[in-house]
Length: 214
Image 1 (spheres, rainbow, N blue to C red):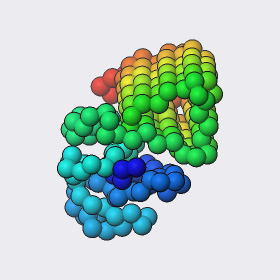
Image 2 (image 1 turned 90 degrees about the horizontal axis):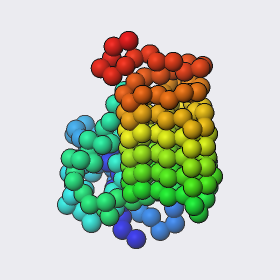
Image 3 (image 1 turned 135 degrees about the vertical axis):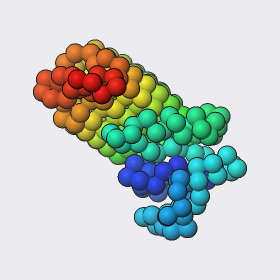
């Protein structure tokens, strides 16, 4: 099995590194990140090797593990910048996660510990699924979305490309969270969230529309 390179060295990347250590036969070569302040140092015992572009000069598998509520589009930007074929990207699932045989996971996607995918869940490419989330029957998570820790999605929910669903959020069955939208932590989402909007609260309501206006 090829070595693995993780792009990023922040919280999500460090969590993914611990996932890799739990996978038999997987060797983590190191982190790649922009900037030089940590280059040549160890982060949680893993070396920071060089810039993300080093992945293009390697035969190792790659996962891009960046993004936060402040910049949740970073994974998409880095993947576009590297322009690697999909075959270079690993799909990583923690051994304690449970994924039904009827589910599908795209390249570059990471599923962290304690997550459950119940039946016919479709997860796209470069998706971050954080610990202890529940994705139920027929959910669709599009490319570059982030599902933060403790999220619960009802059946037939669709999370659009690049959207971010914050920690502990609950999303009612059949609801769509639009592309690039942000759902705040602990939100209870009972209706569709339009693309690019920021929603929060119980029940969730719009805080900001695209461009940051109210």
